[in-house]
Every structure is written in C-alpha cells, then in structure tokens.
Image 1 (cartoon, rainbow, N blue to C red):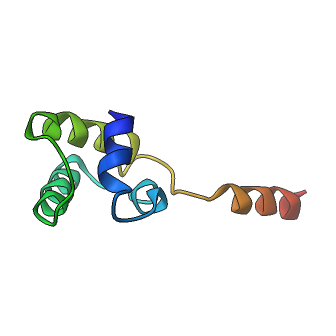
Image 2 (image 1 turned 30 degrees about the vertical axis):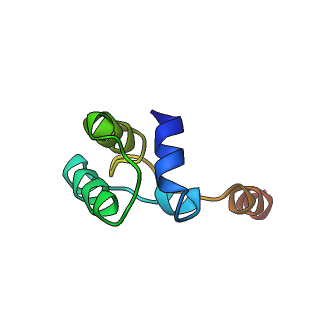
Image 3 (image 1 turned 120 degrees about the vertical axis):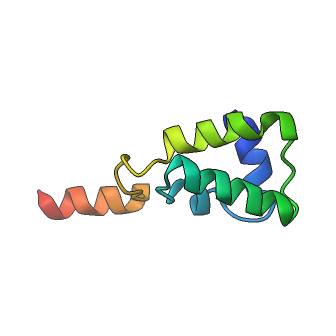
Length: 79
C-alpha cells in the first residue's frame, strides 16, 4: 500500500505533506475522500486499505515528524 499511497499523494504534492500529518482513522478517511474528489488517483477497491495504511503509519499516536536534517542538528545541539 505504501507504493499506492506514494503514487496517489505525490502526484500533486511532496511526500512530506503526508508524512508530517498525524490524523485519526476517521480524519484520514475524510482526507482520502477529499483528495479523491480533487483528482487523486485512488482505485475505489484500495480506498479502505489506503486509509488503514495512512492511519496506521501516520496516526495521532505517532511522534511528530522531524526531517532528518532537524534530527541531526538536534543531536549536535544536545551533545
């Protein structure tokens, strides 16, 4: 499902827009439906699996997204 999410989402914007999100399953469902209406290419048969993938990997329980460069800078500052 990662490849399908990447294909559908990065058609219009950078992957960073997705990976920085921390949404509930219901919010991801709403987001996928909205993006599909705006033209994202999501096979209707893949919709539920895509919502499951996004809500599992980018849920409200996950730590906030930090780009690699920020992690590197933070480690240097903390040391």
